[in-house]
Figure 1: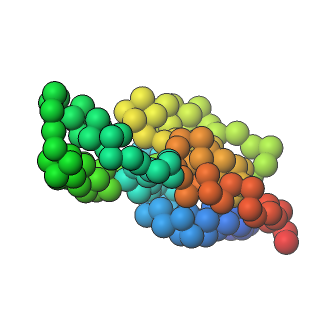
Figure 2: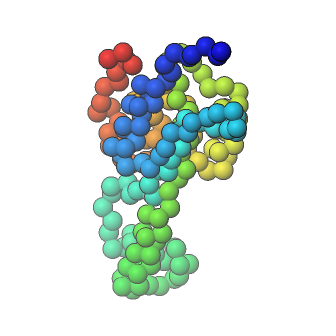
Length: 163
């Protein structure tokens, strides 16, 4: 008979990270690995919502210049620019960035297979990282440009899994 394993020490950290992802409305799921799983697939897989604005006010001139650049046009009316930018906003909101997060307890590192998988996904354009805490996950998402993560970065306390 196979001896029973104890509780997974990553479970509380995973729960904390998932709670933060839920709060930031990042669609995600917990990947459960097993004997038939590909090696190295990380614990959390999700999609960061489409591009966010940097919060800077946009003037009519800047909007028109952006629209002209998108359409490769030399001239454009405000109405034409509005139509082009509206289509672009819809397109950007529909596009998200894949997210792969390997969860580890403090002091532990990702395995070689996990590092290889994350590197492969990163090369393909995904946001990938190893997180030892919810704070670290938020910092990585902020570093990747996710505005919601930048907004909440530093606004919560890490708790050890025992708290």
